[in-house]
Image (cartoon, rainbow, N blue to C red; front, side, top):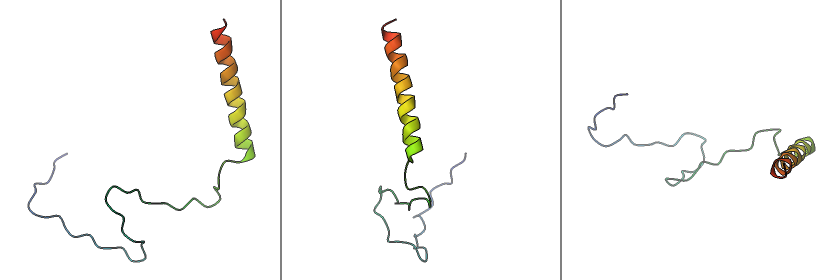
Length: 65
């Protein structure tokens, strides 16, 4: 990829209409949560626990084998 040569200062940044306030350099831009995705459901927690138990049992079986 060819870079364009530096021929002066960069163009000025202009705020977007309806946007929030500017953020200092290096800050992450906050994003609103997705609609309908409040967090893990009970079913997802149950699947996670089952997977963790299976992995733990396989690990213990491998250690004592």
